Structure formats: C-alpha cells, structure tokens
Length: 470
Image 1 (cartoon, rainbow, N blue to C red):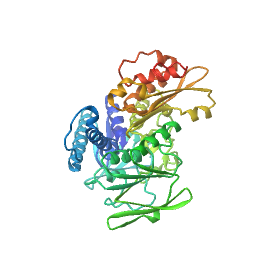
Image 2 (cartoon, one colour):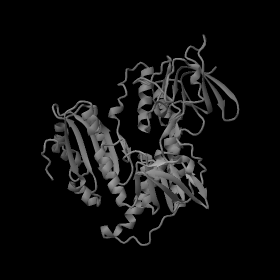
Image 3 (tube, rainbow, N blue to C red):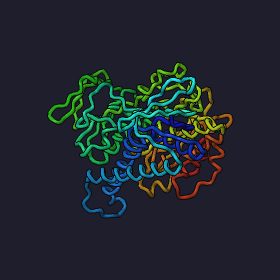
C-alpha cells in the first residue's frame, strides 16, 4: 500500500486547504476527489453565484446611471456572456487550486474513496479508492480526514434540470426564466432571489418559517424582507408547500401551498429548491467504525475535528459546518492538531456569516435574542447607513449596523449588519470578538473618513448613547 501521513476524502474548500496546510508542515498527503478539486463552493456554489450577483449588480448600476449624472445608452442582459464570465472566473480559480496542490506536493487521486476497517497492520483503518479509470487503489495513512461535503436537499421533488432545479443545476442553466418560484428563504434562496430580481425576473419566495434569513438577528431579517419586497420580490412566510403537488406542464411549473390558513397555488417558468443541504456521510464506510458517531447524518467531532476513532478527523459540511470558510478553518485546525501544534480550537460562535443579497447581510456572534437567552444583560447600539457619508456617495443608504454588548462589562457579543458591502466590513467585528474587545474599544479605534467602516465606530458609540452623526 502507498503510505501517506494524511489521506483526505474530498477536495472541496475544506479538503484542499487542509491538504495545503499539511504540505506546508512537511506531511505526505493524498486527496481523493471524485469530481474536481475546489468542490461545491468553487464549481457550483459560492464563486459561480457571486459571479452572477456581480453581473446583476453592474446591470442594476447601469440601469440607474442617470442618478449619477451619466448616460449609459441601451442596456441589456446577454445571459450567454454572463455564463461565460462565470466559467472563466471558476476555471482560473480551479487552475490556481491545482497549482497550489502541486506546489505543496499533494497527490490528487480522481476517484471515490471508502473507509475500510482497522486491522493489526492498519490500526487507523485505510482507504479503498475506485479510481476514475475503473481501477482500485489502497491507501494507508497515519491520519484520515473526512471532508466529503454536502448536497442540496430536495424534499423529494424530482429535479429535472430543465424546469426544476437546485442551486447545483441553476449555475449552468442556459437562459433566464421570465419567472421563478424559490422554495426557501435562507441565505442561498435569497441570494438567487436578489440576482434574478435585478435581472428582471419575477420572483416569488416561499419560506416555511415565520421570517426569511432565520439565522440572523430579527431586526436584520425584518429589514431585509422590507427592502427585498420594495424590489418587487414576493415573499410568503409561514408557507407550507406540498412537494407532491409540483407539476411541469407546457413549460411551466405549478405547485400548491398553504399560508395564513389559505390554500394557494404558485406558477412560474422555473422552480428553484433551496431548502438546505444534507451531509455526504453515506457510502463512505463509516459503518466500519463503531466509534464514529452520527447525529442526523452529521459526523460528530470535537473542537479539533476529531471523531471517536483515533486518527480519523472530519470537517466542513459533513460535520455541520455549513460555510466554506468554516470548512477551511476547521481543516487548518485539524491538520495542525494532527501535527501536535496545539492550535486554538474552533469556535463557531465567532465565525462570520455573509449573505450576498442587495443589500448585503453579515453577522458574527450572538443575536440580541441569543445574548438575552444566554443570561446577558445587554446594551445595543444601532446606526443607519443613511448617516454615513460614503454610503450617500455610493447612492446606497439602506440598512444599518447593530452591535450587541454586555451591559456590565462592555464586551462585544455580536455584530449584525445590513447594507452596502457589509460582507467586506464584518471581519472587523470578527476580530473584535476574537480579541474579546469591548464596544468602547471599537469606538476609540479611529475609522477613516469617508469610509463605510465608520458605521462600526458610530454603532459602538451608540451603545452608550453617544453616536455623533445622528
């Protein structure tokens, strides 16, 4: 058997980042990937959708050029070119990932890996690989890292890639629909809703829960719903969809749902199912290890990524990470722990969340409700983007920043933003939480003028009722 220090199942964001870090530490590493390195995030998720969102943003700006004293001429959407640009961005990044893996001496094996039970010769188990060419390889390693990711849930609705999609298929659809129904008002569903609406598509969002973006602070969710409705996006919350009612006839999709005690029907040219993702934990040999536990399909790990089986770690969506940057961070921590470097354990409460709608949403730490439920006496500081000069220069003044702090100690507990470029701003709050900063410390850090970052200083001052420009 070829001997490796580390074999990684899955070459997505978590897997390839872990492989690179392991290579930096001098480990001999193999990555087993059945598709293409980069995984869902690069090829079917984060990067393709953000390329689409950028095209939609530019289109919106061009159609509103007169507000800036400009004449843009005739403006239209060439969807084929939008797709081509997306493909170019993805391909460039894919080549970059491949080059980084080669640079760090990582062996990439195209195929499907299965964990095999430990033996006297392989106490940590080994990996059987069915290669893309139909052959078999046996890989022995001191450590194994499971990074097999996730897949879209479908509620049992047949996905045909022609009229009914998940996000996996939508990134390659060759034309814009005239209308779309989106099942699910979480981050993925609302990003698609935002970009379609900007491109002139009639959008209906059906969300089962009482509010969209349910993981966000309630005030942020309410503001997002208000602003997205203003853009003519129809949003129905508390919607109970009948998956069995989905029909495709005459090039149109129909379905039935109940909301507010009424039976209703929705109809569109396309149905996008965006109701969460399921972990890829089946069919990889976990049944061969009694010590590896599952919880609703997710592999149970500790803060370093260790499973119950010595030598086997797991990271990313398959453990419930849910975000590409979470998987990458978990991968680095897991590899450094294997190497005996005693890394700082993963703290998911300090990981930023980003939603790339227009306006953007970003948050880190506890919501106000979570902070109160945890027993904190809280003080809250809010400040609107309308009071920030750079926001007026941009012509994008909707939204606000909200900081949640402990009333006794002043320690910052959470930051919640909705507005222009907040996904680029949130890292300041993430660093503040990592360093256990107080709202006062954030307020005395000098924020340059005019920048959007000034909103942090103002919101921090607002926790003491001392905001300047309001």
